[in-house]
Each structure stands twice: as structure tokens, then as C-alpha cells.
Length: 147
Image (cartoon, rainbow, N blue to C red; front, side, top):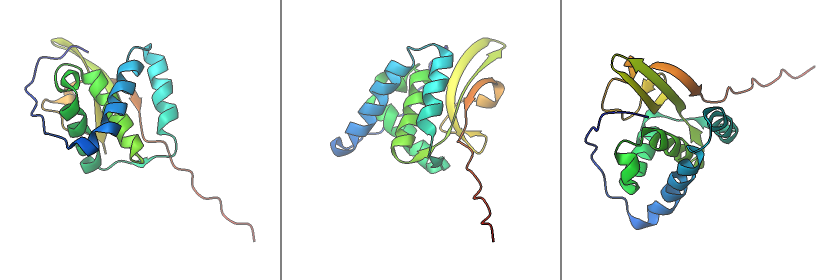
């Protein structure tokens, strides 16, 4: 995804908290090599059974991913968003994962959002037309018991 370089502050992550973040980042690197429809299929399968993420949970995951990966801290918005979603899923929750484009000037971007609001984005993601979304899986309503 093409995005102008925006300075991102990188937190330091304690060594004991790095392994799951590294797993999510490496898995994201492999997933983003797939065709877009396969990326969507993989993420749709991964999100199953997850509760909706809160803004705080998604932001904490995004910050952790940026802390361990220079690529995700820079122009790697696709890998960053996938890694953030995967790390959230490893913690039992799922944000909406989105990709989109804008035309003036043309740019593509990927991000995560909660309740329709982008999480941790330093620029206006609402300027992007959403092209692909893997939302939180709808929860099934419990069926009424027959009496």
C-alpha cells in the first residue's frame, strides 16, 4: 500500500512480551504475500470465535506491532494492519480489518478500526473508500428454548 512516510513513535516492548508480537508480525508478512481474496479468506477464518475488540485493545496491539517491526512502523500499513488484527485475535478479540483507496492523490491504505473509527492512524482514514473489510464475526443469537 502506498502511503506517505508519517513519523511513528515506537515504544519499547519488554522482552517477555515480544514472542506473540513477533509471531503475529511474521505471520502477517506471509499472509500479505497472498492474493487479496486469499488474504480476506485467511483473516475471515482466523477471526472466528473472537469477541469484538475495544479501541484500547486494538491500539495496544498496534503499538506492540510497531514496537517490534521497523517495516510495520514505516510504510508497511498492510502488514501492520494484518499483524495488529492477528495479535488481537491471539488475545481473543478482533477489530474490523479494512483496506481502501482514495483518488486525489491516489493512495491505497490498510488499517484496523473499532466501532467504525480507525485505531492509531495519524492521518484521516475516513478519506479512503473502503474496498475490503473483515469485520467482527456476527454473534449468533441463542435460540429460544422450546417449552
